Length: 147
Image 1 (cartoon, rainbow, N blue to C red):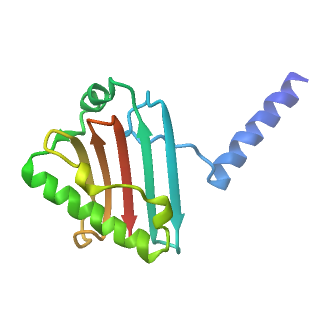
Image 2 (cartoon, helix red, strand yellow):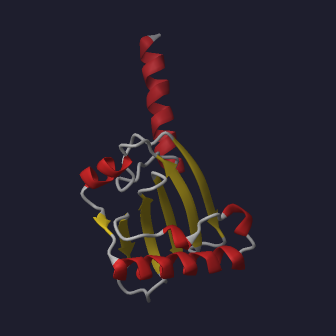
């Protein structure tokens, strides 16, 4: 009986790997958030947009800084971050998805934290993942666009 259960478990694990149902944690999003709101959309084989919010307690800033990927935004970074969020908003609007997008770029301030990942070979705003932590609300916003 134990051999059958072990064999069944092994088959289940293999089936998960073959089907692509592997759960992957994004290392840029520190664990310990209190709740999350996630929206993922894919319009085609390669085009995709993601919008997620991760709600942290008062220790959120420390968790992100301990992650080692995040940096504090300065005045120049604020303008850059706003440009990325405005670009993302245009994609949400083009996809008629604005009811899911509630980010206000005016909340971005110097001293907030961010991590920007782009892909070489793509134009600016062509492929990016932006993680922005608003220190006032303790919310980590994640946007990803591959258009």
